[in-house]
Picture 1 (cartoon, helix red, strand yellow):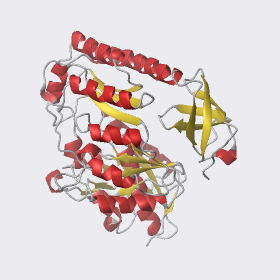
Picture 2: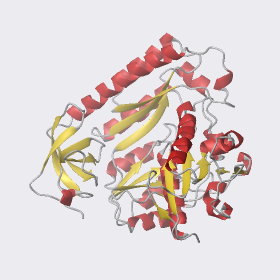
Picture 3: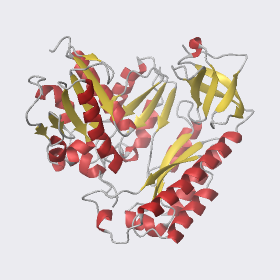
Picture 4: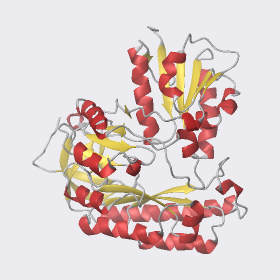
Length: 439
């Protein structure tokens, strides 16, 4: 126990990292630490890293420097994907005291003998082939929603991706254990649970259980009004799942489906497990059963060998698809990936140009999707912050709403009529007369 000591945790990267950081924070609190903000002079910093992009690596170094400016004597521990991939590199960063890999991050307190600054950083990182334990996690603290980790690791070796090297094999708990954790979340005051993982559609791993079986059980849990499925691979998004969501009151009509490229040539080079034709089938099936559904897309620009024609094929493919928004990633070289050895490299200025084109297309798609719903009334889950006099929230189908701030509406679900899209691309809403409050 270290009473009267303060810890600050900072998360880089995905929703999965947020769920894990939150669980690690609760471990510290159980040991008597007070959790504080980054600039509140903590005794210990824990930085949970990502390594999906080159910028995430740089951000880690920047955060260490920032932490040392706040408290030069703070003990600094680096955990997460970057820590698993490059522990020796991180250990050389001035000010770092401890580096913990994929398995060891959940045993962080076992490695604390004291919190004095070290001459040399201690490294605890197993070989990734030895990482096979699943540690359940969920985020707590944001009253509105919780990120629930249902799966970890990945058995897909896409040629651009380091995640299998950083997180290991695909693994998960049983449905019974996962439901038990979800019931813990249901006892908190969150209204929405987002299912997260590296490759959540792969849940089950030949154990006779599937992701479809899991969501059917989660749907029965009392106390959680909304579930959202985070990113799910198109080849794992079955017709059964789509049909189930279309009939469920708790699972939201919102899908985020990675595409990465609209060119079959590039998809093959990326070693993706589908062709563009399957992607079209999935999108059309969703829209047939749920015309109001929101569909988000991940896409990578500037992958090696992507010609101007390949990119325009992707652009046209996305332009014609009834999707709602894009998450655009500019390809960046990652060590120990197959793509890094490919010779037909796209110049960085060309990658940037293509990225801008798709960002503009994404904004067009989002505004078009929002405009289709103006004048309709939807249930909106409002957040718990005052944004310059407005309260923000999201409809079931992920339209961002704002209304004039009223504290009593924080973390409640209300019926709202969608009025118009403002200059910032947010929909202004009008509260319905018959309020349905879920305090």
